[in-house]
Length: 76
Image (cartoon, rainbow, N blue to C red; front, side):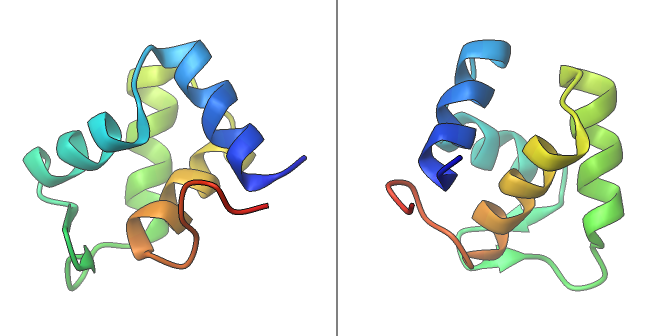
């Protein structure tokens, strides 16, 4: 599955676009436009996404990669 397919599935499941999830992560104090804030661990993001959106580990890790900036929308 491509990275973009993960993002598409996440949007279908949650109703939230990648931009929406970035904004929510910023509101929660996890990230800013440059990436994850100092001291924020992937496990913090995973717990949030699993609890609030019911995402599994793989889909949650895709959002972590998006927030870190290691992957971007449209990546395969």
